[in-house]
Amino acid sequence: MKRYLNFVKGNWIFALLSAVFVLVVVYLEIELPLITAKIIDDIIPNIESMGNLAELRHQILLMLVYSFAILLLGFLAARCAAIASLGFTANMRIAIFNKVQDFSFDNIDKFTTASLITRIINDTNSVQMVFSTFLNFFIKAPLTLIFACIEARRISAELSKVFWFVIPIIVAVFMIMAVIVVPKFRIMLEKTDKFNKTLQENFLGIRVVKSFVRENKEKDKFNEANNGLYHATMAAQKIMMLNLPILMLVLFGCMIYTLWNGSIQIYDFAGQEGALEIGTLTAFTSYISSVITSLMTFTMIFITMVMARASIKRVNEVLDEKPSVTDENADKSLKVTDGSIEFRNVSFKYSSEAEKNVLENINISIKSGEIVGVIGATGSAKTTLVSLIPRLYEATGGEVLVSGRNVKDYTFENLREGVSMVLQNNVLFSGTIKENLLWGNRGASDEMIEEACKIAQAHEFISEFADGYETKLEQGGVNVSGGQKQRLCIARALLRAPKVLIFDDSTSAVDTATDTKIRDGLASYLPDTTKIIIAQRINSVKHADKIIILDDGKIVGVGTHDELLENSEIYKEIYISQQKGALAQ
Ligand SMILES: Nc1ncnc2c1ncn2[C@@H]1O[C@H](COP(=O)(O)OP(=O)(O)OP(=O)(O)O)[C@@H](O)[C@H]1O
Ligand SMILES: [Mg+2]
Image: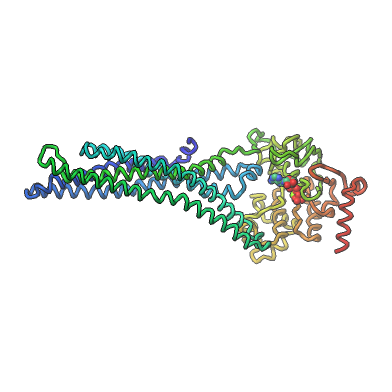
């Protein structure tokens, strides 16, 4: 609750103004029927005398003023409520977005990207609905209900007995409806979730869908989700549709009862002191509709709240999530000064429930400036191993040290300034090539950019684009080839001039000749920087100072190419099979 009050920050004044305007509107709406009553009962019967004509004009004018004031203030109240609730939602979205920025890979894996998107778009909208309904009606409905009841009672205690029946009946009907409808709404929300998931998964992976010619299967999947949502919504709406007719029935029933009884009273007690008059009866019927509409508003508030409850829960889940890796206890002044790396008895698993460790008892020592190759079958935990160095994931056992200090001692900023990683599934962002490269180093000069691109073998193809470095990249870099994208990502990482550079299979889409050129360039570029190269091809790491062989999360060999050829059966096997493959080509 406190969290949500915080989101109103900066918009309190509008929320309050809206409440004040609503108060005045309620007052005016209660007053209006009394003027009608006065005109009908006091002025019209005595219209002959000129004085009363003036009085009639006066009262009509008053009604006009009241009506315009209701219109204007109603508009202002709604406007202020809209400003407050839109501001509220904007703040909530910022809070979620900022929270997600603090998430480690672990947290993101847990929620999944699709679900985070649904939460920040759909769920915040539902919460906004509650907030704006609250602002618009939460004050208005009870006040109208109370004042209308009071006024009605003042007019006729006898007639207002009808409320003793009506209010409990309406409340009972709504309670029954709520009991039936709430579970149906819950199902509807689950189906909405499923629908969003299907949609997002498809759109995010549309290229894969097409390349596997899965369109028809995906259409079926979408149809199923869409139908599910349709039927679930229908089931909930079917009951909600009864809402209005039931209210109308009650309203007309009340009106008929009141008019009948009222007319009898007017007839029976005509001329007596304090007897009911026609105008007062008219005013009374207005209060009946006020009471019933405010009761209807209560149901509306109730239903938006039920609908939003699931959303509030989902928003809270994100906001309550503790980033699994934080740098709160880091030493802010500590910087990565050299590229030495050490793994001491490191073990790791992705989820605490998993039985088996993904990395088991890893001990490595890498000197600053070394070139280290990492090879191993797919799934042998190469990516996992290097992810622990920039602390994308946290080691579950043992210690990872960079330049002699535990990675936990550095702030994320300082650690990742010193350790740059070209991810296996890297992305570029929409913007120009140059803008993307500047992610590596904001202050890089054109010469520096060109140099890094030359090493990464990207300069040549960039120069061939009509706009060169100013070429616009579409979202995710879809308008460059896979190999070109990889080379841009390498250049981006080089520009950082870090102490440790990690390439996770970063030249997998690059031809062997270019791969060799990149490797040769890297050997002399940033000579003090430790370079860790994960590769499928032994040729890519053959010249490394040290090669680490991983098998099923364990190190099964460390050494230079020649040493490993002599000592490691696995290495020899891979090498021979790759040589054979190369010869066969
Ligand atoms: N985010 C994740 N959540 C849970 N398990 C994961 C995650 N990423 C990888 N794994 C699991 O950890 C193991 C090691 O994966 P990893 O990506 O490190 O292998 P890899 O050697 O890099 O493989 P490749 O050569 O295919 O890139 C695999 O069994 C994989 O299923
Ligand atoms: Mg990998």
